[in-house]
Image (cartoon, rainbow, N blue to C red; front, side, top):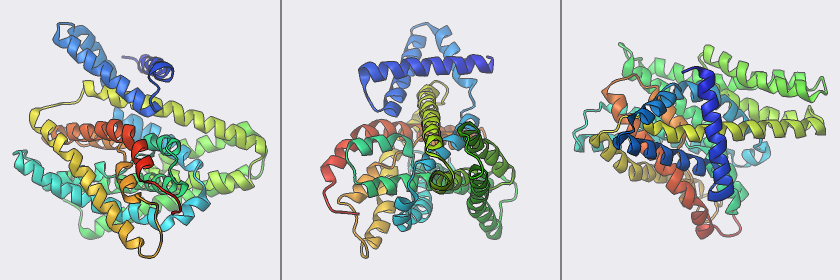
Amino acid sequence: MHVLDVIATLVTLTALLSYVNARHVRLPSAIGLMLSALVISLGIVALGSLGLGSLERHAEALVGAVDFNVALMHGMLSFLLFAGALHVNLNDLSSQRAVVSVLATVGTLASTFLVGGLFWLVCQLLSLDLPFVYCLLFGALISPTDPIAVLGILKSAGAPRSLETKITGESLFNDGVGVVVFVVLLSIATLPTPPGVGDVIVLFVKEAIGGALFGLGIGLVAFWMLRRLDNYSVEILITLAVVTGGYSLAMALHTSGPIAMVVAGLLIGNHGRRLAMSERTRGHLDTFWELIDEILNTVLFVLIGLELLVLPFDLGPAVAGVIAIPLVLAARFVCVGVPVRIMGLRRAFSPGAVRILTWGGLRGGISIALALSIPAGPERDVILPVTYLVVVFSILVQGLTLGRVVRAVTGSGAD
């Protein structure tokens, strides 16, 4: 199938589902679109079992023509992270820097090992032959949280602004940290000679610290260019170059592209917006990146729903996926609750902050994309459906009930 035909079909389907959701269903965009795509996928599978196999084959060919990992990790992700960081207030983020830093780094690492260890026990219980390092790999890919679906729900529920900042900041940075941890573990699992401790430390520093410094560098270059002209079309083009060229160069240099995009987006969205742009440029820039963000998000969540058509599902992994849902939530509760309780000795937190941070830690497309990047084999056939079930539960159940959780547990007067 030609790439233009695939894009045309996906965009048309996304537009139709967006219309139906906005006009009739009226769920939050990400949740409504993924649910609609899931219903379509299940309907196609049901029709295939009734003898309409040609429809199922055509649908599978369409979804199979999209390399989800490449589309997200080497395409959409750079735009989504930059657009998300572009609208984060650096002063708000700075006021929560201790919490965000601890949750995005220590919390992600702790979650990786806690989820990995518990998942290994589940696999032993179900007689699934999954090596321990691959269980850790699952822990790494499922630990990053996704800011896309949760922010609109938090705002509509009236969550404290500081809590929004914590969740947004953690999500933006733990995406990058999670990807780095995943890359390290994948190299240990797949290379003939696993890297030593020194190699792992060097790789982690190069990816994480190098990505942050690289993002700062390209952000400063863009800022310097933006200050020297007042032409909104050229200025928007410069930000596009930061995202496309910057991400590609970061990957070529083997530094973290996701972390680079977050740092560059924060710099341009704050200092660049305030010191290097006219009011007219700011308006056009915001409109452009909000539109890019919305379009890519809608297509992404439709793709997540359609991925059901091509994923392998056997009884063992399906049962493991159902068990993994409370397991991942419990690990999230521990890895959020312990740091918050410790930091709570010196600062105040919003009432119910741990519960909201736990339930609001939605998993999304990055987890599925990372699972799809695991080399084909029995390990991937276990991890992929488990990841998909956790992500679907996270977006549908947690996403749909998060507003009620926020309203039930938040009060006044907090950080």
